[in-house]
Amino acid sequence: MKILSYDVETANSKIRGSICSIGWVLLENSTVINKGYTLINPLCEFSSFNSRFHGITPEAVMSAPTFREYWESTLGNLMSNALVIAHNAGFDIHETLSALDRFDIDDPGIEYFDTLAGIRAYNLSIESHKLSDLAAMAGYKYQAHHAGEDTEALVYVLLSLCKQLNIEDIPALLIRSHVPAQSTSTRKYDVPVISASQREESLSYTQKVNKIIEEAKDKGVVFDDIHFCFHGDLINPEIPRKHGLDMIVESLGGVFHDSVSGKVDFYVCFDDEETGTVTKAKCLAENPKCHLHIIKTDDFLELLGYDTDEPNLDDPALIRIRKRNEREAAEREAEEAQRAREEKKARRAEKVAHAAESASKFRILQFSYDGSELIKEHKNVASAAREIGVDKSCIRDAAKGRQKHAGGFTWKYADDLPADK
Image (cartoon, rainbow, N blue to C red; front, side, top):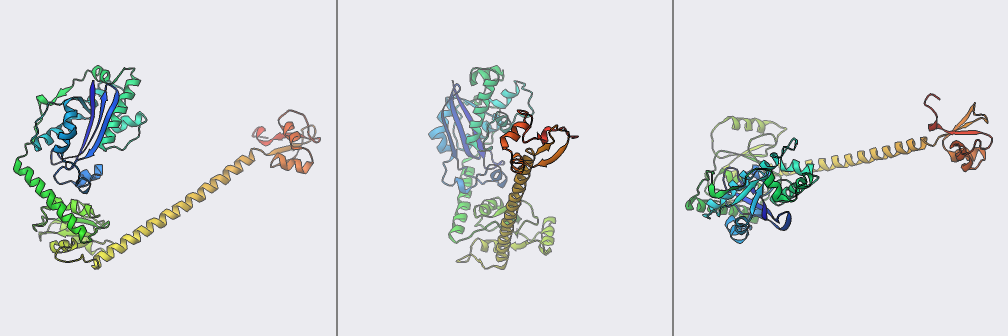
């Protein structure tokens, strides 16, 4: 029986079918026979939240295949000829169906099984059924929210459960859960249908944003760790709409913020509407501890290199931000160096303490011949032998009870005595 472990990541939670990466592992019963992973160009805008979640950026997918291209070359054949398994399959299958609709591709009737429901059905008395937690319990380490690694982790978890429950293979594990497989041929999803004109507009929008990014890079624009927040809608036709700004800022090395705070360097106002957010930005701009600058549309376009041959790298605000970043980097480096010194000092102190503790275990006591009177405590056998003029082995044998005396004295190790002695 062919089984396809399957997982996708998406570019934007508000755009159904915006798949930006696909991972899969193909099995024959429980034997892996092939696997694959690819980035996908979703031909739509990315949300900054999704990018932070899985680490995939608009820039990373520029040269990646589209969903249609990957479906026709690889994925369609795989999903049409295997039972697809996914953890929380509703999400992955729903996004796949939405992508099929976006690109006018017929649904082949995908047979699929939700492993989340299947594992829950076994009532294993575990606190969490999340894939990452199940993998951790099975002793498997991987990078969560990476489509390729998620599919491999799922296979490992299922094989571990087979071993734990003494079940012969993955197909039997799925069957004995009594959770039925489902098929997209009996679709219960309300999948939004994207018209041809909407697809064309989405592609045109992505191309515009990518063109802005490339032109800015050609002009030497770098937002090296500069933090931006935006207010209002940018009417200038060069930039399609507000939600493309996070792609532009982050592709140029900057940081995009959804709300204004003391961490923001530039608060870009695209209109003159006075709101609570604008008032907050003005208060932060007046605070000498913050480095926030309120700028207008033209100022932001100038930062992108518009209407100038070269970006204005001598702008006082940019110089101030660069100096601040350099100072913070130097402070972080100094803190790391200080931390390293303190850790080294602590390790050395620990070694000294350990050595002292070890040495104390070998303290030896010199008693009178009959053992009734303590004459002296020596730090170790060697020092006692040198002082008394007796061979070390004799003192050691006397302390261990192999002989009664050495050099006319009784000997005992200090740690061998009761605590009250």
